[in-house]
Length: 153
Image (tube, rainbow, N blue to C red; front, side, top):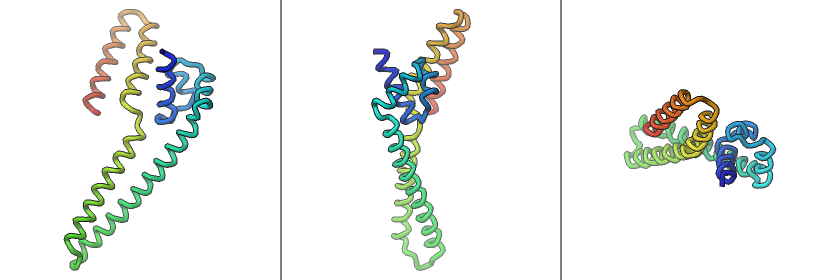
């Protein structure tokens, strides 16, 4: 069961987190060779490349449209003959594009649950290697850190 959990975390870190096999190996305490085997076996590299190219192209296109529409809106504001109805449609289109851009950008962040799972693995490993006094300090830090993140996101 633990292997499946580590494999899922490794997959998220590799594909969405854009981490290297070596980084994942260190974070999860799984050999780099095992991580490399998973990358090849489950074709994570292809999936990461597809995600990166589609996301970057999409984000680039949206950003370009926002620039074009913004320039057009400025032109319309300076044109006394421009109709308010056209301006409203353009503002609406800009709002929708900005919302889509925000969604794209959020998809490239490491998911909160993945971050918490990785931090849990790190903290558990640290606690097992230190004395009781330091274990309590580590647990307190982890709890405070997690609470701050929960309030932030």
